[in-house]
Image (cartoon, each protein chain N blue to C red):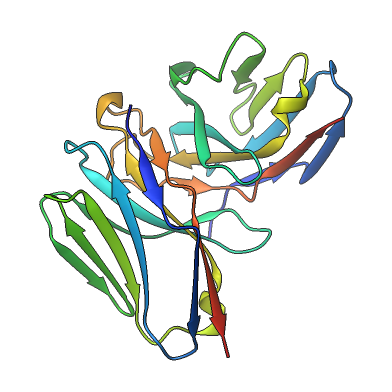
Amino acid sequence: GEDVEQSLFLSVREGDSSVINCTYTDSSSTYLYWYKQEPGAGLQLLTYIFSNMDMKQDQRLTVLLNKKDKHLSLRIADTQTGDSAIYFCAEIDPGSGNTGKLIFGQGTTLQVKP
Amino acid sequence: EPEVTQTPSHQVTQMGQEVILRCVPISNHLYFYWYRQILGQKVEFLVSFYNNEISEKSEIFDDQFSVERPDGSNFTLKIRSTKLEDSAMYFCASSRTGQGSNEQFFGPGTRLTVL
């Protein structure tokens, strides 16, 4: 079945760029998402990209999609301590029609050191 | 800003007991979801609900699980006879449509501990 994989941990210094990577298995994926989870909070949608795009930029966030390699990345420029959180890559299940079922990766914990 | 709320934030129960997890989705949303995350594992889809019926469910969502929208605001997940392996964080989500371009808003979760 469909699968989404991420590395588990990333540590950066404040002010550096962070790059969080994700791979997925289903080449027919249409929408891919990045969610952020802060301690004690729910999952917050940061950004998403449609499969006909290679890149999407939103302020400090840049999403890159390599469809050939089925690789998605999230770059956070000028990382701040407030960016420390767990970041989840997700895709909408291509086989689920319009039910909206999401498939998540295991989450990458981003630690930002002052 | 509208948000999805869930109660309780933490539920402790004995194995074999029934639990009901409650969610209040965003008021003009039509699609509702439950996901769960066992500690250290991925967030897993359980069920989606639209037009007062289940639109999709996962293999995890067996006969022990049920969902209900008893009134115009609440969306509940019932586990009839809890097992140890049901211990997890349960997230409710809602969206206006089921389309990929439409954001799913998640609640803060209910941590279920089965002893």
